[in-house]
Amino acid sequence: MVSETLSSSISKDRSTKNHSRFRGFIGTSKAMQEVYEKIENAAPSDSSVFITGEPGTGKRVCAEAIHLLSTRADKPFIKISCASIPFKHMESVLFGHQNGPLSEANPDYAGAIEQAEGGTLFIDEITEMNLDTQSKLLHFLQDFTFYKTGSGHKEKSDVRMICTTNRDPLSEIAKGLFREDLYYRLHVIPISMPPLRKRGEDALDIALALLRQYGEEEGKSFKSFSEDAEYLLKSYSWPGNIHELQNVIKNVVLMNDQEIVGVDLLPSMIRKQSSFSVRPMEAANRSLSVVAGTDMSLNSKLIRPLLETEREAIENAIFYCDGNIPRAAALLEVAPSTIYRKKSQWDKHGSDR
Picture 1: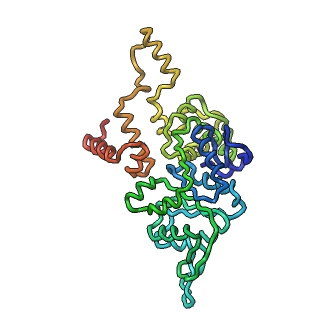
Picture 2: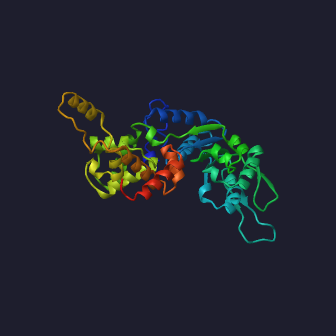
Picture 3: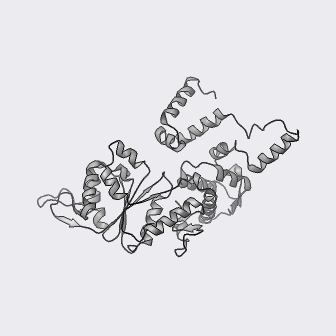
């Protein structure tokens, strides 16, 4: 989400109603107001929280907000990311390691559970955790006791669990990659983070805050966006969510210096995706002129063939998913086979569109 510098300016004492900023978030959309309310309701409890959402939607910020609003706020907030931990080290990272009396191969160390004593343990991308460690985590959640790797001594830790995933946990269960009993043990308070494309004008509010923040950091004079640039920012689908928006605004600030950001300063993929959309007032004016008989043609820059815009949307999604077609298909809400079939057709007919 937004950086710590931006988050530090956010008030900690407001109620959720009509929030424009809340515990690291920016946005007044109905979807985000519901998230703020869920965070405030979940915070006082010690029950596990299961946060889902696409990459870049603010799952980490959500977890931190819950911790900071809880009675454990003055205790540790320990995060581990399962996606970045090799399977063979997962158990030791979580539970810690203790050598036998005759072994000096590896130093003893406290795992995340022990480090989070009295506070919150945040497990990011939990569906990436291997099944053996999932089994041991499930055992821990039954009575909050555990054994360090290499130790026969039972230990106990009082922690509040918050976990996230950008995958569909039920789909991972069906594939045999995630334990169903662990899922239901953790899935006590579910929170779903909405993608930026479903947050209305929040994208523009975040973009403006980032523009001013980055401009100040770089000593530049940026103040706002032009009306046309605002329209493109609001209408773009943001497949990379907040992460993509951050990168776009950062690039604009680093490569330019002027008070108003016009369309010409925005990346081509934003201009292209939005170029076939007709702004409401333009559409109304065009309808009136057609009725009056003064304009019988459509502007080719505004209206493009559906096949062309479809291919562009698919290729953009594949690009932002680093070539991962199943993930791109999920963002586009189509079956992966649809993309594979269309790519095969395009390859067969060469580069002509």
